[in-house]
Image (cartoon, rainbow, N blue to C red; front, side, top):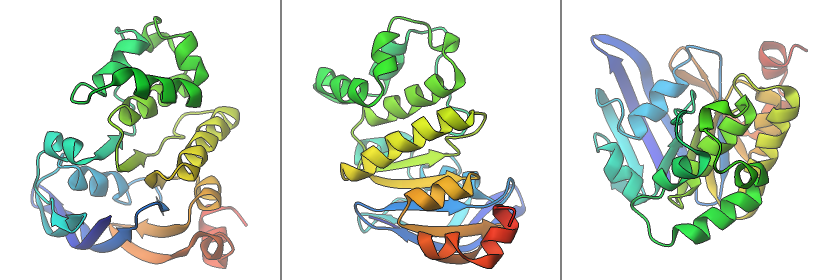
Length: 231
């Protein structure tokens, strides 16, 4: 579904991603792990059209999308849940969700699905989004992205700032989406949870992929355990 080849990304004259190549197949859950500053966010912002100073190839369903506008990619079925959630804090939960489906038909059916996945959003749909807890705001950000019924869901650090309990709730919701057939690319620093949930993984350090493979193999790799799991 997504094929990235020899991607180089720049901030001004500074290159921050080098020769990045990876892929996500339909129905897969794939994670990209790495420390802060590794280039994970820059990579996905380039894929979804938010950063346009790049060279290389990005194919979505076999068609080039590098340099496309975010709203065009949204209509093609590519949705991003950003690291900082970017909800509208003074608007009610329900309006935040509906904004995610403005270009779509049958919003009620989409809302029913999201409320089944995140019952707390149904309970608080008239509450201002900015008054939700951090975990609830993350659920709202995911729900808003799901309103477009994306074919590929990209999540940038969804566990950032969450307690272990709320992190577990968010990851369980992502596992449920995976069981339903959703294709997911997950960027995470919570290496243990990300590798435990996903099919395959890539390790990004200093703008380069330094390791890749099945998640179970990465989870038991001595280098990964030492660098990211504290073993």
